[in-house]
Each structure stands twice: as structure tokens, then as C-alpha cells.
Image 1 (cartoon, rainbow, N blue to C red):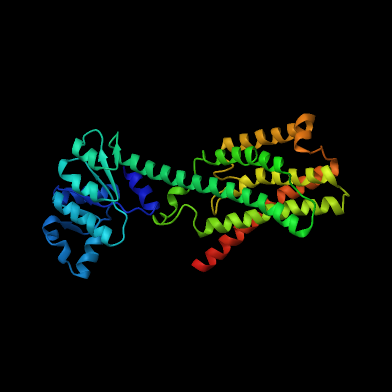
Image 2: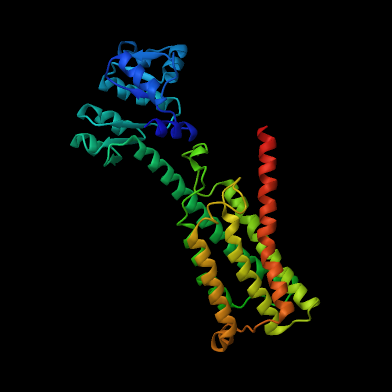
Length: 360
């Protein structure tokens, strides 16, 4: 449990002991577990008789106290209300019938599944089947991982879909040849978008996820930074595809089916490689939650195989109206499709540098 308490501190979660036991017992256990520092103050139940009537100084002292002893069930409920009034998100653990009101009032009520009463389990939001505090920390980590994976999933899909819309729209406005045909867009949506996105949803999270501060519970799934990422990555994919289209026409003399093939392959492989832009902020480029995810690599290999089959199997290539490019065409596709990853890495580094300077 001592390690779990330390993990909570790293995660920005403050653990407070509220017990009916004697103050000396509570203090000794709290110091041994790392809940309270040696010499930290303890508040006993008799000092909490009128929490609503506390002055500002006394209120701050109570909120900063790590250990409460000789506390009644009613006072546990009052403490939950006090923390909530201070803007805290409160999780409350308990096992008895008398804990039910506080469990129900807390933002997250956690009941013991082994020794907890039926009333406590019914009042709680979560029931621990092993009664282990470490399970709470594991659940916190898993919750953060799931939330992060959902964000990656949405940012990846939306940036890919926006790039497909922008590629066609800007090409029409600029008077360029149509870079993508309707069936090719459908192929991209069913193949190169879906499988990497599903793979992102299976990630195990960044190694330092419990060292990151808690997010604001009122923050939406896609907040302002995520929309900025979607817009920037969409523009990068669009620019890479249109650049390949222009270079293919002006420098390589491509036209018709050969030109469409270059723009189609650039966007397809660009989206596949773009999945590696979905790593967490501050994560190493080569070692992060995305590169450690074997399903991401399987998705990239699988989608690459399907693209090559579509390119070199005549019936499929005929339906998609594409043809295998020559060596120069493949070199152009490789360079252009890798550009969003390289530029995305630079964008992420620049953004972190600006944020670090603003915080400093």
C-alpha cells in the first residue's frame, strides 16, 4: 500500500485518512504508509463538530490535514462536502452501513467487495473485489489510458478525414487535376483509416501516465489542443498530397491515371505513417505508447499489404483506376508520405518548447 500511496502522490492525487480509531494509532499508520509526514497535525472528531461554522483559517487547516481520527460517519459526510465546496473531486472508500451516505455523496464512492456490507456496495459507484487500495490506483491508471486512447483515436481519424476533404476541395479551387476518385476515398476510409485507429484504441498508455497531473473533469474529450492537432495534421497531410500531385505533374510529367496513383498512394501511406504522430506530449520519438503497441505495427503492415495488393492485382487496380508507379514515382510517394511525420514531430517539439517557456 505504501507504493500505491506514492503512486497517488505522483499522479496528483492526495490521500487523506479518515478513521474512527485512536489518534495515536492513526498517526503511526499514516506516517508508515506515507500519507502523513512525521510531525504532521491530526484533527480529531471533537474538533469537527461544526464544520459549517469554521472560520477561513480553521477551514484551510482542516482541508490541509492528512489524518482525521475519532471521526463519526456523519462527520465523514461533512468532510466530503467540505472538500467538494473547495473544488476538489472526492473519492471516498468505505465498507460499513454508516459509510453509505458519504459513499453516495462523494464524486466516486468506492466500497469494499469482500468485507463491505450490502448497503455500502449499493451506495458506491465502484466495488473493489479484492479490497486492495492498489486496485484503486490501477483503476485510475486504466481510466487515464482509456481516455488517452479515445483522444488518439478521434484525433487520428478526424485529421485523416479532414485531409481527404481538403485535398479534393483545394485541388478543385486551384484548378489541379482531381487527386482522388470517390472509390479511392472509400477505400482509404475502410482500410488505411480504420485499422490503425482501432490499434490506437488498444494502447497501454505512456510509461509516465501516473506522473501526469489530473485533467479537469469538465474538460471535453476533444479540447482546444486536440482541435489544433487535428487542424495542423490535416493541413500537413493535405500539403504533402498536393505537393506530390504538383511535383508528379510538373517534374515527372505524369498525367491521368499515373498522376492520380501518386496522390492516392501519398495520402494512403501518409495516413499510415501519421499514426506515429499520435504519441503523448513529451514522449520520445522512438520509444512511446504508439511504437510499443504491437497492434499498431500489425495494422501498418496489414494496410501496406492491402495497398500493394490493390496496386498489383489487375482487377482491383482497374476498379480503383490506379497503376503501379515507376521508380521515380515510388520515390516521390515515399518522400511526400513521410513528410507529415517529420513535420509533425517538429510541430510537437516547437509546441512543447513554447509551453515550457510560458510555464517558466
